[in-house]
Image 1 (cartoon, rainbow, N blue to C red):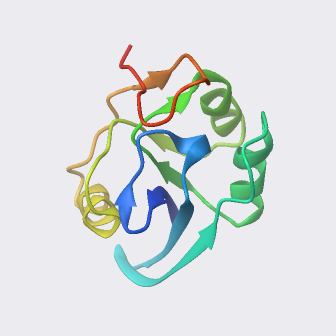
Image 2: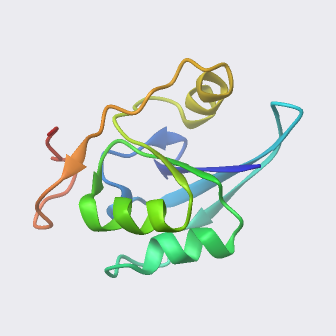
Length: 119
């Protein structure tokens, strides 16, 4: 399994599409076996969910995310966890322990950075 975290360095970003990088964690036997950081290749409608799908991602963790991206991830059978914050690795460990739940935080505007609202 692969879990991607939308990040600014090692911290979870508030808005998926405007993140600096994605940290992709490889999971084996319910533990992190490897991780790598890849730069965000650019925010274009519909692009990032397909990009992460091609990376083999099964779960995406972010602070907030637009409804269109959530819909595409759902179509690709990629689990979406929004409302997360803090250290990326800690969030993945919490997810693996069953202690990280999505809050359903959806961003509704694109003229912002780090100001997503909850809905």
